Length: 382
Image (cartoon, rainbow, N blue to C red):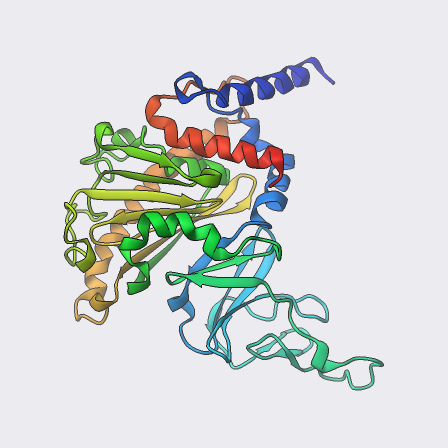
């Protein structure tokens, strides 16, 4: 091994050791954690193909036959409201040659593979396979798209590729306990903002609990009223957390557009809270809305960030609703743009020979917790 590679290995080991120390003694991790293809492949296998993952809202596929497709670390997924009115999740791979049986989103009575015309019903069963009548021992009735475990919680759709994963109710229990009073089941999806950032997915997850940067990067948005003395952080299992702070509504004016959510009348206007379900669901709540971030790795150095804005169901249908919700989208776009530049700059320099992980500030205790839980997971494989 060349001398500089040996030096790099020693640097990585030292960095992990220093990240394990208490936050007032700790450093951030080596840049290799964000640039190693080998580490990224292990993350896919040990995290994204084992955990429960939030993939959207039930109101995105509200009616029978409504569907949407996605790809999770290379795995094609089809989500559809089935004949029994339940949300189904299938591997979006035709049983014949592997072509995706659906693209994008919409409404269908059945899914027909565009290659050879094999057709599947809303429960994933093969109902037609042209010219297969002479194939020996081919039983149409026994053919079905591979089902993926799928459950819902407070209007969110979760799936897992691991048949041995614990029940979803256990996975979401900390979030239910900490944020159940915000009644997401009584809200609907108002905005779904899809963004892409040229950085490793972990930098996004860390950034969402990095309150060190709020008064600098977001001084005219999320940091307008934030003070570090108001920041309260409580760790939860597996890198989850509960936090409260002062930020106020996520609108250009800093005021609620529709007023407070009825069940939040007792909170001050500058109330703000955040939480996390590992690996990639980060929760944000205000007096007027809920706007979680869901982070998806598209590759080693590219990440998709989806922001869901939920508002009480009672607001929908108002004559000026569409015009009013533009305020939330405008604000989200500004915040994403502010973070995007910083995140892409960090990622670009993670592989620099001059980069050395810096010491942590006490306000980075959230980042410290997330990083150490990640290291626990990667080193234990569970």
